Length: 264
Image (cartoon, rainbow, N blue to C red; front, top):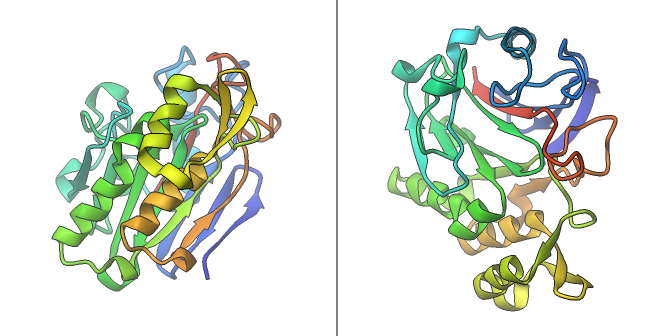
């Protein structure tokens, strides 16, 4: 059974099958100055590019890989997922402008690349298919969740001959249902999508608390992935100010954590 553990202040690890490294960083152990203190991994905020590069290098050292093996997605809050090949190595690693365009999901069979994405409240979804030597990473905010980024990833794996029973899922830290309040417009999208399984709890007039973990879990189960293969960290980024950045809590002026996965 996979699980989330923390043995280093800089990251939490998803302990899945041997030979797969999957980590989600905290805000600790970097060189960035406030309000990006200290381990900001995004070039898309007004942090010093040199600091971001230094922070990314520290994380590549953790996973024992080189910066030019890192591949990043553009992340546009949609549902497009793509396969990553060796030729994609370094895209988005040194600057955001050449990240893989239009994607919120990455899959690979290659051992010489590291899949990476930035997060500050959205759900990082790690995928492992050890039997077929495949890993993946998805970015699922409320829009990506409703648009089915998780279903698109499973569909691509099925097209590649993968049985959903062989897929393992790890959801890393993100904003939890304790802190994620949405209005009627967003709530209706989830009611339409999941019906009786709607992951909403009334908060106040016209507003609801949304459980993105449960929304994504329900979609994966519908796609045929065993519930026992879905592991959720249940760490809320908004609650843990000392450990994580949070876009909502910090009103947009904050850094980004990173999700990274690779195979040996």
